[in-house]
Image (cartoon, rainbow, N blue to C red; front, side, top):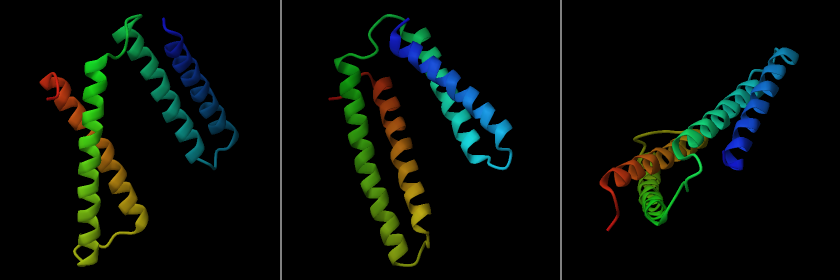
Length: 128
């Protein structure tokens, strides 16, 4: 098992234990325990899945790095267009959003478009 996967699993277990202890010690506060539990589960699942998928083989090569870079650049362009559309929709009064909601929409647009573009490019096989 690669050391980075062991670290992910150990950090995940520590976060989950800390989140569980935080639930018991501070019953009024729900945000910190939920964040710790979510982060712990993410680290734990990521470590286990990456270990099962790759084992001791390399996790990336030139093709996967190229696809990742193209996917992120396409997501960046999609984000710029989406943020511009949000700006004009707010300017013309079509949609009224708080700054917090606009940032949330922007982050979700960037993250989901990156995932979608990379999935599409990996299925396609390569970028030209």
